[in-house]
Image (cartoon, rainbow, N blue to C red; front, side, top):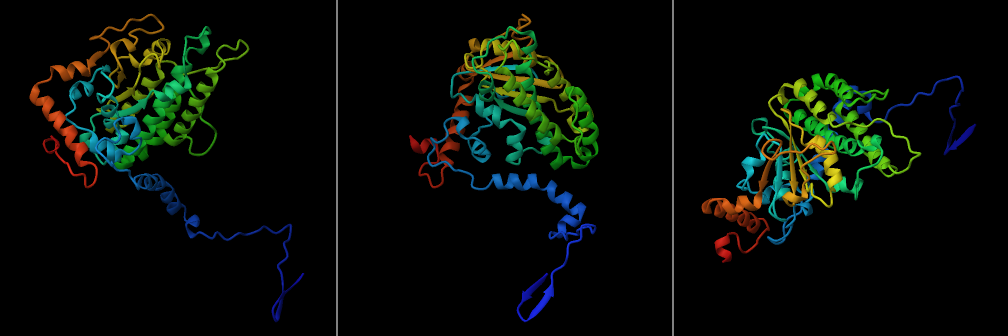
Length: 376
């Protein structure tokens, strides 16, 4: 074939079926495996930096009166959270906890502010300051998957909520541990991740997919996200007598995986897992659903502590589906923030109130009032 090219003519190369095609890689990085691997590992860090750009600010001191409206704006949550929060010592104690109090008293704010993800985002997750690995979970997610839940008539469908909540929490646990340890214990994590991942697969009772990189936290998190969806989807068919149900996580799986992590990584052995379960309140999270999940949340172990927030003592069910009655002071500690605020000393209350108002008044840029006294 002759191709015209101005004053010159040249023959186009012929493609021979028996001759292999050789493609030259345009990006030099793709020809250097080590540099390419390092580049891929840096994607998560760059993503977090991008997420921190364009952080919203308060326009008035009365913006974001609800913690849920703050979303992932961790800098705003940091600016508004007071570490003089009354009842903080009980919340951080090594006991299972039921935290109650009137709406707007700060339950969500303190739970989210103590989470590892938040502390990492604001640069306060240094190992010497992290006494526990805290996971924050808001029950809106649970409600959307199991709205108006009632106890199913089929025994094999009982573990669907367990499967969903276990998958959700463990996905956050593994992602959080990987994020934090890569920053502070990178060598120990890199050396141990393949071995620990194999043990986690065994504790989950799941068969790993046959693909490269399966013994990694990212691969397990990806599978757990799919398991979440599987449980939520299956819940829609619990009344279908023709529907078959397979194996789902029991109440022991969450604690077993956390124990594997604690025993495998030296930097986790003295740092238990705290699960802050926010808005665990009926009627939204029904009594039947609570009694099902209490098999998980009322376990007493040395590696996991469960902290549940609820709107009032009567919106929390103190039993489970096995008719086990949980006794306050034995299985859990009940902290009523309303009573804490009433019984706290005057100086303690004033310091807390002044700190809260001071933070809100100073948060908006160029706001004319910066102190509570100036506003009076």
